[in-house]
Every structure is written in structure tokens, then in C-alpha cells.
Length: 481
Ligand SMILES: Nc1ncnc2c1ncn2[C@@H]1O[C@H](COP(=O)(O)OP(=O)(O)OP(=O)(O)O)[C@@H](O)[C@H]1O
Ligand SMILES: [Mg+2]
Image 1 (cartoon, rainbow, N blue to C red):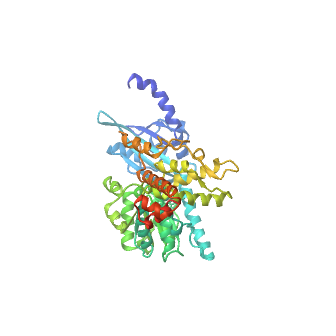
Image 2 (image 1 turned 90 degrees about the vertical axis):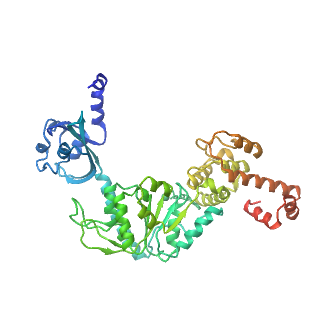
Image 3 (image 1 turned 60 degrees about the vertical axis):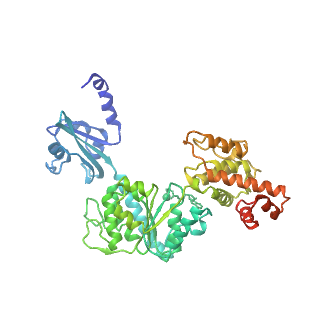
């Protein structure tokens, strides 16, 4: 041990004692050299009674094969993320995810360490969610309310070309039961689209179950999807999974790219033959479930990184809906702002009439990394900042947008031309520019000026702008002029 390591070893030991991960280190002969408080809590042992004792002394029922620490000492190969459910020495049922690694010096195995993450509480909560869902379906069958979705296509706001394209595909797909893959960055409306597809289709009176694949530990996910049978593993009971619960309806698998690769293979099999088998069960049963899946990273990236199986990708991608980031649909910002103002007026019983022009410029020039969700929060935040009697959202009511070297300076309406030239002369491309929004802004300003110049006469203004009258009328509507 170097001087520095020796100097810090006490602190390291203290730190290992404090962390919420169980740590058990054994020497070459299997006797315990370190055992922390969390591991003592998981195993139901006293920490002091463990050090210096062999694994077999502590857990007499273990064998060379069943003890992961001893196996790793023999093989020198690590065992990663193994889920264990067992009753500990105080009679408490524990579920943990363990990883065991060999400790080597100059190529020789000198010991092994086991790290255990106690997921007992997560398992209990997971089971509760499944049970509650089951109860919900039983009671909803009685009341004929079969799903708790809230969105329909009519709730989706946007007229930009990219968004309308996506919406058109989604509407067509709602007539069938084919799998759909919805992709788009965070906050672009993937969940809204999924609910709308379900609600517009023939399955609308059947269950819609949304499950985020990133939210559940890998080892629990299989039981959650396909169900369990009594005795399949310690503590397992007969319980349907979400495939059974969604039978006849739709299963929305969000963040599908986080699903374990082995489970992706099982999912593919269900998609192909429509049959599932509960964990530990013998019987197969048919399920009729439409799969909608979502990813918040580009499909290409997920395939290249090997986090989504290509065969599953092609099976899911029968219908592909790509939701654009808000940055690419700047012309939808005024519509969305109006939509959220109406919504919050209703929710808060307020009477906000709109946003000032400088505030709209601010909204149009921001890059919206959190997309529509972030815009919604910005408007909600502005509602909270309004003083009583104020009916219009001004720049100072808007939140400070993080990391934005704003094109439009707060509080002041800088004319658009210098803004554009400043943007164009920027050498670095670290700060995104919302070019479509800036162009829209210029167009809107020029049309407003032309109309004023021509005393509100649309035909003359159209002539002045070298536009067809019809085209100007369309733009007047688009810009709410
Ligand atoms: N087209 C739209 N019209 C109106 N509101 C929208 C639209 N798209 C999204 N929203 C709003 O944005 C919020 C976020 O949408 P949603 O939860 O569907 O995003 P998401 O793509 O699933 O994001 P994440 O990847 O973070 O889960 C919604 O609550 C809704 O208020
Ligand atoms: Mg979502």
C-alpha cells in the first residue's frame, strides 16, 4: 500500500461504511475482511460478528456453487447484476441486485468483493402498482371507464409542416393495430400522440397502459411485462403482467431503448406470435395487444450503439412517427402560447389576454431544449409572476432561460436586422439560432408595416409586398394580424 493510500484507508473504510450499497469483501480463503453496515442490514447480521468469519460459517446453507463470492474466487470471473430474493436471518424477505468481482494483484486472485443494492422497497412498490392497476381495471369494467388517458388528436396544437406530417401519419395509424414507433426529443409530445392514437382507434374502450422501460430495474421488468406464477422465485405469487392487463387494448412502452436486450428478444417473440408465458408458468396464452413504443434518442443512434435490437426495431417501426423539436417548428410557438394561455386562464380562473410583442420575440428566439413541456412551464411561470390587474405577459414575467445568450436582449426590443447580422457574423456554432422563428418574425414585422403604410388595404399591401392577395390573407391569419 502506498503512503497516500495508507493515509486515506481509514477514510475509505469510513466511507464504505456510510454508503447505501452493501459491501462484503473476502480474502483468498473466503474469510470476511470487510463488511459494511448496509450489508449487515440486508443480511440481518451484526457487523461485528461477521469479520474474520468464512462465508460458509455465516451462511451454512451455501455451497461452493451457490455462493457467488466463492464462485468468483474460484473462477476469477465477475458476476454482474444478479437479482436475489431470499429470507434473511431475521426472517425478512429481501430482494437485492448483486455484483461480485474478483480482487487481483499481479494477476493472482487475492479476494473477492460483493456489492448489493437493496431493492426490496422498489419490488414492493412495483407489486403494489400492479395490484392497484388490476383493481382499477376491475372497477373500471363496472363503470365502463376503461382507460385513464386524457389526450385526443384535437388536443394537439401545431400547423408547421413537420408537425402536420407527423400528425397525419399518427391519424392514419390509429385505424389499424400495427406497432408504431414514436421518436422525438423530450417534451415533444410522444405520450400525447400515443394516447391520441389509442383514443381514435377501435381499441379506445379497452385499456391503455403506459410503462416507462427505464423506470423499473431490469430483473423486475420481465415479471412486470409477462406476469409471474407462484413459486417461480422466492416471494413470487400468481399475478398477471401488463400484457395481460392491456389485453384487447394498447401497451405504450416508453423509452424502449432502455429495455434489456434479452427482454427485447422476448418482446419481439410476443409481437410475432401474440403469445405470452408468465415467469415460472408452463401455459402460453394468447394476447391481443397493440404496441406503441417511444424513444427519445434518434433510432440510428440507438441501433449504432447496440441498445436496440435491429430485428425489434424493424418490427416496431412498421409505422414511424418522428416528432420535431420545437426549434424546428418555430411558427407553432404563437399557437402553442395561445393554447397554454387559454388553458391556464381556465385552470387559474384568470384573464390573461396574450403576450406583448417583445415577450413574443423572446419566446421566438429561445432554442427550447425542453421543447413544448418547457414552453408550457414558461407560460405557467409567467402566470405566477403577473401582478393583479396585469393582463398581458411581458418580458419580465418570463423565466430566465438557462444558458441562453439571448438573440433578443431582455427588456428591450432590439430591431431584427442587427440581430440577424449579429447571428450571421457569429463564428462559433455553440449557441443555436432559431432561424425559422427569426424569419417568421421578419415576415410578420414587414407585413404589419406594409399594412400600416397602405392604410389597412390588403390588396395594396399585397401589391406592395409582391404577394398574391390570397397568400397575404393566409399570412395575416397565420400571424394573427
Ligand atoms: N402538440 C402539442 N400540443 C399541445 N401541447 C403539447 C403538444 N405536444 C406536447 N405538449 C405538451 O408538452 C407536454 C409534454 O408532452 P409529452 O409528455 O407527450 O412529451 P414526451 O415527448 O413524452 O416527453 P418525454 O420524452 O420527456 O417523456 C405535455 O404535457 C403537453 O402539455
Ligand atoms: Mg413521455
